[in-house]
Amino acid sequence: MRQSNALVNFGTGVKINRLEVPEVIKHGDPVTLDCDFTLEDNDQDLVVKWFFNKTLVYQWIPGTKKRPQGLGILKDRLNLEYAASVDANSRHRALHIWKAGPDLSGDYTCSVSTLQSEDIETKSMLVLGRNGS
Image (cartoon, rainbow, N blue to C red; front, side):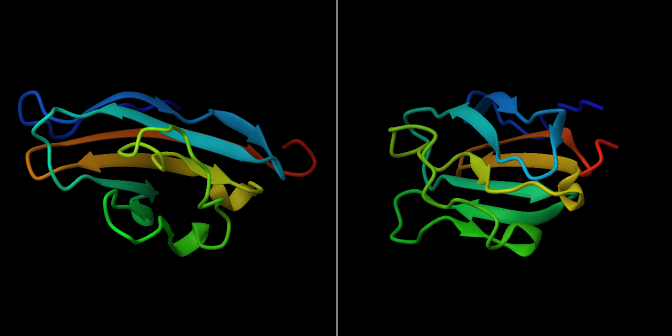
């Protein structure tokens, strides 16, 4: 099941160009979920969030001294040093999961917001169990 829908985008602001979430992966494999986006020159106070089945599991606020945060089911399961880009505003836009398990099957939503706008997209991922089922 693939789902992609922009929920809120006020005009020309921040835009998700591509949400990369594999449809199916194997139990125990590492996986990267990427949320490639563009900003307008006047966009301020960028926040990147990821949700798993509508629950916040990751947050990154560029321009602050805070590191990206893994939360809930993904706490201690993410490589928080992973860099998807050299650009300071999109460096930590992606989730790099060390080892996927069947409990991580579900809907992943990327939310990119600024003071001016927000864009949101969702895709599903299935993690196959140890016996391939």
